[in-house]
Image (cartoon, rainbow over all chains, first blue to last red; front, side, top):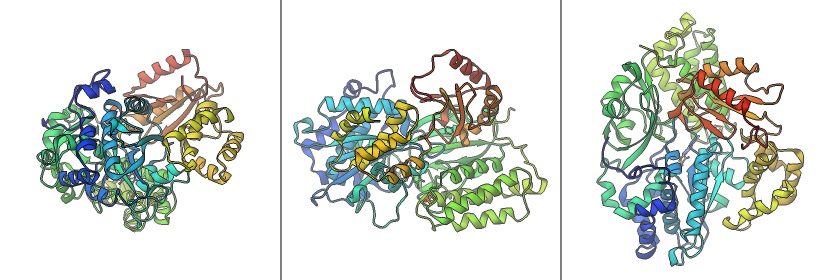
Length: 439
Length: 166
Ligand SMILES: Cc1cc2nc3c(=O)[nH]c(=O)nc-3n(C[C@H](O)[C@H](O)[C@H](O)COP(=O)(O)O)c2cc1C
Ligand code: SF4
Ligand code: FES
């Protein structure tokens, strides 16, 4: 594991999430520094120079997003932290919420100052209970200590944070859908333009950032943009939280410096695959890691993966993406047809139904894959899956439809023979197995 | 829901003014916590309190998987069956629970003690397989651990509201 740490840089104890512990490790100094010594635009400039990219999926430069808002234009602005964390395989924001909620709150106060946001929201997924309670308690602590609310740290700056709980809808993680959810309407994703920094929450300029993206702000303001740039690679500065699951000995949340060698990460840090089975494939960044970056939904095969480094550019060039940081490790002997079946069931279930290609397409693909798994696959089914999957590309309002298509195409591209085998023999080449086979 | 209004009104202090739509989802969640589900009269109360169209509340209600219009059993077992949990035996776990409880997924036992359902990724894949028991996550469950869990719940006092907090 690399030594560079931005977020997981303290020892987790029974009380390390409290305000007292956070302050003891230097917490809220960055807020103090920003309010006393920096102008709002200086903070944005700093984030711009840090090269910080979004950690929610698309790796969009945070500073550039913020520059879409003029803090002095006299209208209300809103900042929303996306803590919906619904992308299958992803559980890294939960680490921040449970173990260092004040990092998020301090960073949001700084960001609110920079963006001129009087009111802010944290949209936390409905099922998260302990993370919610930790976060809500931290918010009360911060209000009690004058770190949120009116006249923060005596600076005259005022901002409020409202913790908003979702109620079980994957699509609400999509930024515009999330805003609809907060507004109390049916949470349909919205077409762009207008960009949300032009017309977002309540029709006002709004920045939506992932929890991890925002939580990095305090560190950057504390240590400076150059220090952040010194970590990671020139095109992917900093670290990322990766949540690792699947067929791996030590699943969990890891912070890695971008550019870290994937092979070393899997075999040394994560302990490799149980039974030392060979690696079959990896889904590097949540099952829709491609969701916001274009044509990069892809399951990487073992050979492709072993030589890679964990870096936005490298994975993009490999035809995939670090996405949401939800890495799923798949051992040899796993039935990819069954895995795709689960993924397609998920997309079908979660489609909001607004766009025909997504609503119908995910349903058709789900039925076809169910039929294949039931042993009733037809020779034309694979071609049909391809056709439907490709029809989603770029024809839908939000990335969910694309993701379903990309995931399918990537599976068929990489494991076409396994799918063909299932259709022809009416059974799985791997006995339908998706658990890590004992060896 | 009327008795909850003062508490819900208090939420306004950290919200932008005149944006009461924001309260719809928090209110529905709070009502469900209180009653165990959302009844017709709750919708009436919400419509009256916020002065919004009833259809808006109905639309929100139907959008979210966690909101329910009918009660569940005292213990609501939600088995995550997404990719990582299935890779660690979630499907076996579900089949075992169906057999042990004598119900199919989506059903409630005749004595009203257990409801069994599936859920998509709970954001706890490192602890796969995961079952959400009312509000709490139980992680890294084996078939034996599920048996122990059922035993534990059989001996436990049920929560005040079905499927709710203990
Ligand atoms: C279907 C769908 C689900 C999404 N879910 C999440 C999520 O749970 N958390 C998240 O941060 N971003 C999610 N996103 C991405 C958001 O739309 C948005 O790009 C992101 O929150 C921006 O933050 P960032 O720039 O800091 O990465 C999702 C996107 C789509 C299309
Ligand atoms: S792509 Fe799918 S989920 Fe997204 S808006 Fe369209 S129908 Fe809804
Ligand atoms: S797949 Fe079950 S918690 Fe993520």
